[in-house]
Length: 109
Image (cartoon, rainbow, N blue to C red; front, side):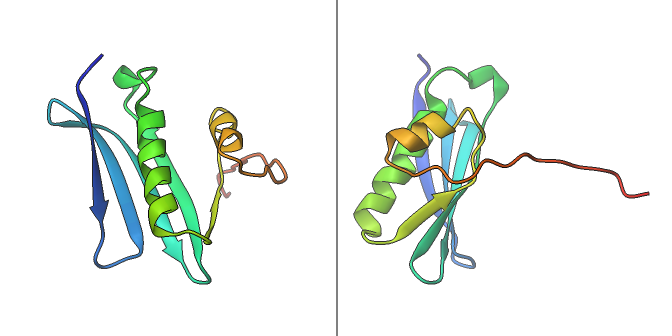
């Protein structure tokens, strides 16, 4: 397995926080969260480079963010929109699934 390093970055200008995954100094993945009003945290975009998928990097990023919010934001509400492939991890962590929705798009004519 590659030597994977997870780095946490905090933005001073916004309420965003980022975790990046690095292999040999190259960024191969990221995951974000945004602190919102009323003690809410929105889990945002996650991505892993296609050449580094199936190595546990997504889970490592997710766990780093999860451990952070558990230690820093007890009592806050965390929520996310997720793809079907990510849903089992969220359910494993005790999230409740809401209604399912499907992405649609159309070029405006």
